[in-house]
Length: 252
Image 1: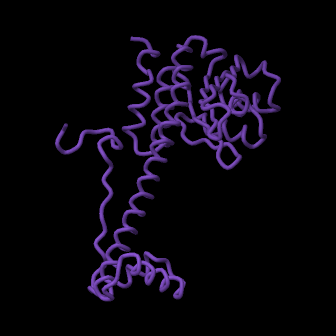
Image 2: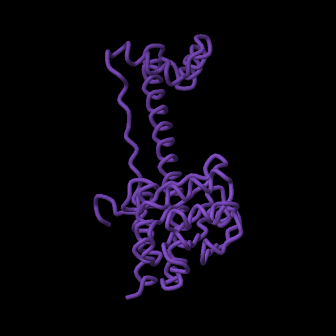
Image 3: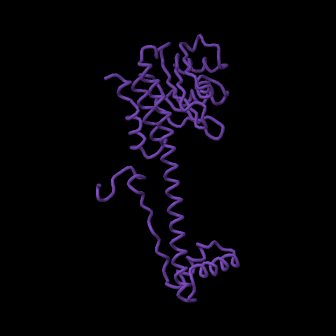
């Protein structure tokens, strides 16, 4: 089995599901790239808040070479990130681009590098950077597998973001459900005390909320707590089988 087969889309998505954060996912990606390429170092740069950051790295050369590029605001890593184009440096000693960066890389023992774009032309654009000791060392690696890895990382980051967005939505939904539950409990109390309709009870609560300049949920929470001596009972949001991607308790 070649490297391309080992790191297909299903493998990348499995990494996303098995890791606890985007950072852990990208660390797994960098480790896999280093294993495939036999490079001296690998790192993943992402643009955050308008500036590049090395999110993860493996091997000694990657952090200092990345930081050198960030400091002078140019280099193969940044060019790949900004243009969405793969940037290959066959020999740093013969390179005339990017100011004194090539000389610095060579002095650090790195003569060649490969920067592969990740999520190009998006607000999470980045690059997978590989650093090699000998000149043109990446020519002896499985470039198709490395390119596939970088391409699949784009999908992995998008998937991780969707999972994060889904969790945020679930949290918001749970908050909304709990607010509704507290308000319903307070409505029941007002209806029992005043012998009025739900609509009339809601009007009473809303008027009190506006008069005291307090959120309706907080007002209802205080009322239930003062009345019972305990905080209101809140429902727990449980995603449906379709939302969670798993079968429900019945297994059907």
